[in-house]
Every structure is written in C-alpha cells, then in structure tokens.
Image: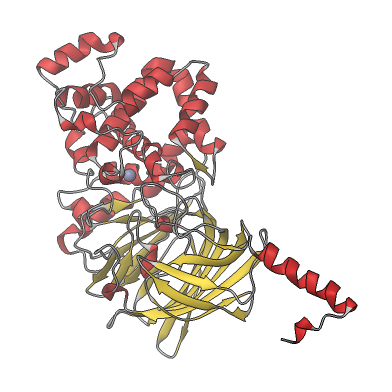
Length: 501
Ligand SMILES: [Zn+2]
C-alpha cells in the first residue's frame, strides 16, 4: 500500500480522508417503515415525497403494467440507502440521474442504494422503471389489485399502491400526482383529480390525470375498463366527473341515481364542513365483485353491490364527508382512524336528519340501546382500536356516538364551529385524535379529557349521559329503529378489508 509512504503534504490529505469515514458513519439506511405501530413496514423513513409522476402503459387482456415512476423527494436524514414500498419487477433505478443499486426485500420493500450517500435536506429525483402483472403479486398472503372483465382497479385501504407504483406508503407522506396511462383505444382510464388531456396514437390512448393537492398513497386510485363518463358542475361550482362501467347490469340505474347526486351532496356538506378542498369531485362504479366503497381522493370508488337494493345516497354522503375528514385532513397514524370514520358516519346521521328519516339523537339512542353492556361491540376502542379492529363496525357506530356525546357536552354552537373549523385548521395535513380533542377544547372552552376517555378509549359501555337518561331508558326497553338505519347499516362494509386486516 503506497500510502505507507507518507510525505508531509500527503499527511494532511490522509487526515482529510480519515474525516470522511467518520462523518459517513452518520449516513445510515432509512427505516423500512415510517414508524406506525399498527403496520411496522408501511411507509419508510429518511425522506419525504412531494410529487409522483407516473407514466404507465396497461394491457387489459394480459394484466401487464409497465412504465416509469418519477418521484420528487427531500431527504430527512443522512441516507446511505432508502426503501420504497413496491411489489412489481424493477429494471432500473436512478437517483438524481445516476444509476442506483436496488434489490427487492420482503415483505414489500424496494431497497435503493444511491451511487453516493445523500445528506439530510437534499432534493432528490428518483426514477424507477418497472413492469409486471399486478394480479400475480402478493404480500402477507393478499393482493388488492382487482381484475375486472375489461380491466383492473386499484382501490383499497390501507394497501393499494404496492401493485401499481413505488411509494412511501403511509398517509403521513402526502404528495401531488400526475397519473398518465396508455391503454388500447376504446378503453378508459379513471384516476384522481382532473383529466388534463387524452391523446391517441397507433391504437393506444393516453389519459393524463392530475391531482394538485396533497394526497395519501392509499387515496390514489386507478381504474381501467370501459366506462361512461359524465361531467358537470355542482350548483356551487365544483367540477364533477363521474364514471360508470358499461357492464353494471341491473345495478346501472341505482348506481347512477346515487352517484349523479355527488355535486348536490358535496354542496350540502360544505354547509357543515366548509369549502370543498379539491379541484374536482366525483365517483366511479366499476364492474367489480367487491362489496365496499372507498373515499379515494376526489374520485370515490363504489362497488356495484352498494346499489344492489336500489339507490343509496347515504354511502355517497359517507365517502364525500371523507374528502374533508380523512382526505384533506389525514390521520397521523392508523390508530387515529376515528377522525376519519367517526365523522363520515356522523355525516350519514346528519343526512338522515336532513331527509327526515331520523335525527342524529335518535340514531345515537338507537345505537346505544341496540348493544347491551356485554356486547363485544363495547370492547372496541374507537380511539385506538388496534389493527385487527381498525374497520370494525364499532369504529363507525360507537365512533359517531362519541361525536353525538361531544355535541351534547359542548352544545350545538361550539359543536358546529368545531365541525367546520377542523378541516380548515389542518387542511391538506395530518392530525390525531389527541389533536382533535385539543381543538374541541380550544373552541368550546371546556375540558374534554373525561368525555373522550369514556367514549373513545374505555373497553366498556359508557353510562347513559344524564341529560338523555329518560330517552335512553325508554329506548332500551324498546329501541326505535330510525327509517334511515337500513341504508346506513348497508354501508358498514365500506372499506376494503376483505384480506383480513
Ligand atoms: Zn369511511
């Protein structure tokens, strides 16, 4: 080793060299999870994505998806390596233009080692070229990519991104999106936001969608198939884009009779939640055999089965309420699911009252009386239900009951100020159940620790609130079922958890 021959000038150079390993020690791999105790490998540590540019091609006949994802991100630590969450086959990765080493690792990690370590605070551009057949890929034994007779759908919670784009897959890392997908002429592509353009060439049509406000990965959706697309504007001026599979059979009429009311319902919700937060609104009903609906941002996913018994505006209210409660204001951790579901369910109760089919208090009394103290329903804590109960009925029904308890405690004036103020307070950001309590305390001037603990965190049936005892005693003897109950209950299977979360 010629460095043994140290000349004075070389000594200075050598100590400089020695300094590099010392500081390189701070360059560590980013964590394989963002730190959510419910889902240890979801999301990643070490960087924050601001934009996804997905330029894809899809062949419905074979389910082959290929393309390039370009991610704009900023490092949040000195990084020697970082992960993306992804399941398809990667052929090349570049970081800031230079080829990077990469390897797939269980359960759904793509480990990327850039040519040079990345200091904290660096803007990075990550290009991932990939291809694959999403329906053949699984993690934890499940696959949420839905094949349909004429295409495919990505819409599930919390997992749907792994099958179509590499990401930092957790709501804490929200970003804007350009989604561009080429499909054979005659097939349509539906995604979030606004349709910027379509272009046709050599038998393929490219659809260019843009979602220009921060969006969680699980709220990004892709639908490919033969759709009828309707466009319009709500009375308040929100652009509306809806889409219906041409293959909905007997459900076609009821689906349209429900989803075509999207603009009217979005306008109605602004009365409670304040201005609509996004550039467009709408929903789509593909020809899937799934049963649920999902609040995919600006473009709600509805399974045809939601309309099997006729129109159901209650599910439209639920999913549109999430545009404020869940999409614009996203949860910080999956334990905070109540700030999504408690309020989306409560919006259904408000709609019931609006439609003259039962007041919110009647619905609360009915839920309270329907579950005796020994019902396992009360063992689910909506404020921290655990991953196995994240989408349990109790998160919705007991969750909405907690909202009504809050309303009775602080009074209508403060309650409706909270309901409308919260989406503004945390617009396009993230918040927790604790943040909600702090906000409700600030607006109402009341201490609410005991109320939140009783209704959201105790694994037992709360005592009947004194002001309501008379009603509840009567209701417990013979619960009166509000007219809206059946339609609300029919939306219980609203989220994609068929794979067992
Ligand atoms: Zn929901």
